[in-house]
Image 1 (cartoon, protein in one colour):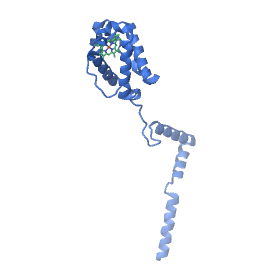
Image 2: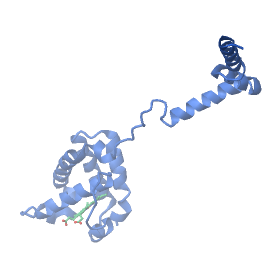
Image 3: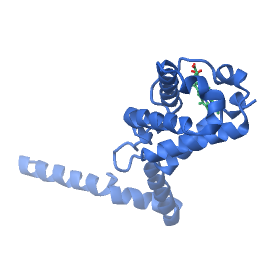
Image 4: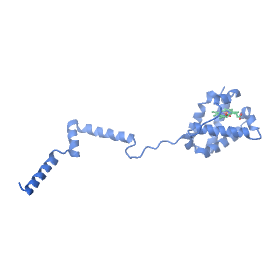
Length: 189
Ligand code: HEM
């Protein structure tokens, strides 16, 4: 066998190998199709697509998580403005004077400033704004005040309104009020 004949034999063997032994993608699926049936293939592929979409792998972009409540409220700027509005509303409401008189009439403003600071910190803490609340527990802070349900609910109405006038949307206001309401039994006597 000369060199040309050897080359021809090698090419022919390779062609035979390619045609018969190597499983091309289409043949591969046909092979499986024949063994487990076309419908099974289709449902398996559909399931894979659903799983990949579910895992957020279809686009290669990780699914973006919902921002924390504090951020959705508008962050520090909106919370600071809302606490100012809240305090003004409390002061304008005769129902609040029974418990807040000492705070409202403190001419130095020390008690008002402390209350606002504590509220800003507590909201930041509760709304996952990345703060720690360092202050009295809600039970200890209020246990001697004999706070009624009416007073509590009036305060929640002011909080909702204060957030509203600072353009916080209804969803976020609802979430914030729910978190406050969870403390009701610690505060109301
Ligand atoms: C979920 C509802 C409430 C929250 C989150 C809340 C939060 C707070 C916080 C953080 C403080 C400051 C505690 C400290 O000085 O370490 C405080 C104090 C106080 N709270 Fe509340 N409070 C709530 C409901 C109420 C209600 C319904 C009233 C009365 C109607 C009230 C009246 C007061 C008063 C009078 C103080 C003391 C202020 C001072 O003496 O300087 N609170 N509250």
